[in-house]
Length: 398
Ligand SMILES: Nc1ncnc2c1ncn2[C@@H]1O[C@H](COP(=O)(O)OP(=O)(O)OP(=O)(O)O)[C@@H](O)[C@H]1O
Ligand SMILES: [Mg+2]
Image 1 (cartoon, protein in one colour):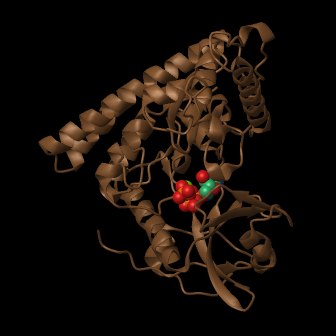
Image 2: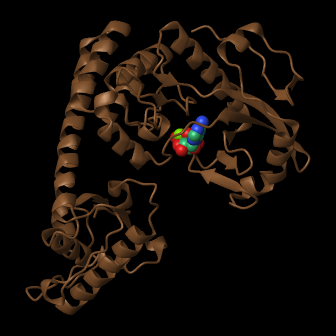
Image 3: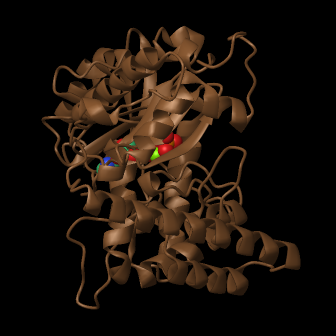
């Protein structure tokens, strides 16, 4: 794709200080930044770099090297600090994205208007991006829920997104990066999707079907089965299709099919257990935590109480911006560095003398203190599922 030549459309108090390239005006009107906005951003940079939410700063979850933030006084803007060598590229890709949407009539995709501007902090100059703030739910898990809840109004939008990915190679396709715009339902029954993180455009195949390094979900793994077929149909039109790509696409569609079955099971689980908000607490009767068939039953009982406490604390403290599933997705850290009661209990077995002959087989894990207790809580319906477990810990869906 040809690189588009442009200059940054920074505007101060309505008066342009930099030269705009005509094509940029056409593609991207930019956002208007007043002198006072620039000053305000400059004055909070210290909080931003230290990741402190004071002075009216709100930080959004991002890559560790990035700072994505808003300030109280500018409710319609999001500011992005990314590493120096990435700003230009990131901004360029937004411009390219706007062009592609225009050229291919992808009107249901929203690329926020944006401008670059400079601030000074401790004698150093930084180029930031100011972006139009789109009305979205910021949490990835909430977006997963939006894709599900609004599926009926997203078919054409997903088709357009598939075309967009084919044309740009946009590859960081995750729910959080392509959120559904709130209140965007139009007269044709379609909703819009905003593309707020276009930094990564590696390959269309990855954007459509996902991949492992770095881990990317891909569009097919964000949508339902019917929409997955729409994605493949578009991909066949716009990419050079090969049998190996066809096999990969089919494999990834099957992965999603299995995942959607789990989603349906989880929905039933929550309905049976009357879980509606996500912060519902596990309440146990002493009698049901019966480990009398095992040696060291008292220790198992204590561990079960400890684990339930941990899960309850975590769901209680979880953000209400997350989906129910997101609030109840619990990582139990069993690393030695975590300083928790779970480390040894993930390694030791009540029924073995040599408690440190740790191995990673499923059989061993089923027989550790933690393995026994987690299984009990699953059997009792307090935990829905073990998503996975490894040397770092347990990933539980409560
Ligand atoms: N234009 C916008 N409007 C509203 N919210 C936004 C906008 N841009 C970013 N956000 C919020 O900030 C979060 C982080 O932004 P962004 O995705 O640009 O950061 P990143 O570091 O590139 O993310 P990632 O971890 O996905 O690489 C988004 O997930 C979203 O919640
Ligand atoms: Mg992102």
